[in-house]
Length: 350
Ligand code: HPA
Ligand SMILES: [Zn+2]
Image (cartoon, rainbow, N blue to C red; front, side):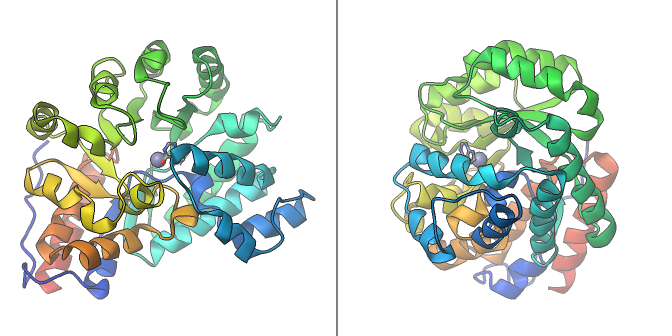
């Protein structure tokens, strides 16, 4: 597919400010819907569903969000998801996320959801699908945000459980664009899911996977070779291998990078150390995402802003990240052209 190249913004070397970043048309390709559950909504749903939370106040919840690594976050994240019970709950969760997108210049989303987190609690997969897809449809009508939904398998569970989930999802395949792989990375290498990814691809689904968030470069290589993924979620550990970085750059394989997530989960000590702009300058197709914004202190705009503040990200770099977010999406050729036109139109006036 040949796409229009990115236009240059006026004052390309200027550090990007909030107004510029907010107006920049962008997509979000790495967002866990369950990770957009704000403490306020969590309390509301706990009350609605008579679920007892291990926290008394919103402040208590926020002070528990003091993570040391991925697992310390996941332990809390799965507990919080227990308040999600009904179709209305999944609708409210998804709608709140899209509303936030609408005020941040996000024009297309490809969110993840984890059916096993819910089906393992006895909730029918249809309840999850229906609530999410009704909200995505409403978001498209109300805010003009297009979407593709991605079903993630939990990698700490078995291959058999992943196959079972794919089977349960079959009546709803029209509602999903692809499959992904998330949860505890270390000790659960991609090859554990080679066969279920093949089955999903044979059903016409696209494939992505978390790889190289905390895990070694071999996890990135195996996710590419054995799961045949089209995008790498996180992938920042590729910096450990010059050869792998070169391959990812040459093949223009997108990396859905999540800067604030990496700081909150202690992949890097501070944002000043984050490699995203170095990867961008080396020609890797990186972009900015929020991962689990309710837990990591900000949605996609805040992630862009943090890069401007900590790394002096220029308008030109921000525009390239937004362009990458659009050109890496699974939205289809026509929508992609429209979004790039919108981006170039914005840069001509911004
Ligand atoms: O950042 C993440 N990594 C792995 N699994 C996840 N599930 C939600 N967020 C994440
Ligand atoms: Zn993630």
